[in-house]
Image 1: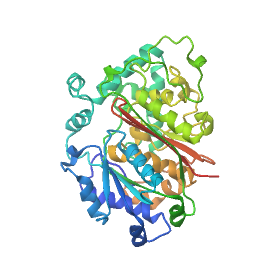
Image 2 (image 1 turned 90 degrees about the horizontal axis):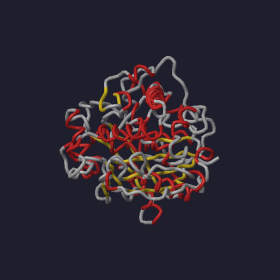
Image 3 (image 1 turned 30 degrees about the horizontal axis):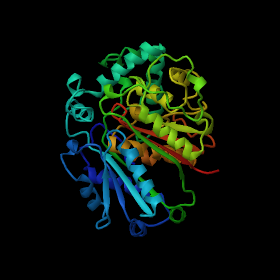
Image 4 (image 1 turned 180 degrees about the vertical axis):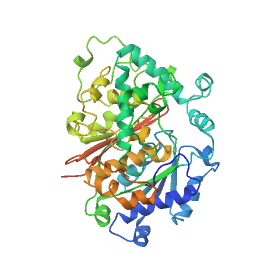
Length: 427
């Protein structure tokens, strides 16, 4: 990966992608020339052509990386673009049509002002019905947050703790854009973006790039002595217009029964849940043989675009039953040392949301964790210096002891597309 910044005027997108590709290839046992000869297809991940004002930007990146005439495809599914691109590469490998597929994700969000950038992003909502009501995703999720607070009555401070946690963990990453230590009072009393969401509770707008290399098992061992296996993938969709989502029986996960929601009076998915996320998680759990995610996963990266979307995701993927997501935070399970540490990367709130790179960023962080490699990357003084940053004097290791399995949730829009990918680093 590159680091992620609000502004990156000194480097073009092509250069950022090349930097990320170099880091990925340098982590293998082969030379760049040998690796080049192994690649037989590339997948590119960019959310919006608008930001860089360049259609077919993937072709430009592909050429710059020296991969012509190898075929390439570009994937776009809103905020889930990175996860969808990774899923596409995985399926290409599994089908036998390719053996080595680099996935290159980036976003150039610094060539327009923040207001224009928000308008571009909000164009991924239904422009016929939803855009005229707000033209900002913060407004959409503020409505969801109001509804969530009304239905389930969590402590308002619990949602602020999510922002506090993720900004804090971002302090120990050389890649992060918005690290910091905040008190709960500072978060709650910060400037409001869209009531009740305050600035520290909203994701950053970023520029940067990330690269993952997917390959078949035989090739994996040519590249590294410790490959990481994809053991579960899932994806789901739902109507672009949130108001079109009709009530239905709750889709149960492997760790739930009908008794889990006995006597529940709230509609589902309503305005506080995401069918697409639950559908994606269920597919991935069944493929991976996961029956209790909190017990059988060692860490997770969720799409914390806003504090409320994070707590919604805890419930959608079964970390807690619907209506009880606050317990996941208050119990300590979501923290390092808890049963399922979540967003140790700093997440989208603390570290980055360069949309096309986001799902790949999540998987890269899990990759390093399940290889026991987190310290090697994040504690590297030279990496901090390369990005023009100073490593904190109180640097804290966020390596999860004996981490083996991790899951990433990549989420788009108001839940229109969601992917779920589970990685296993082996024993």
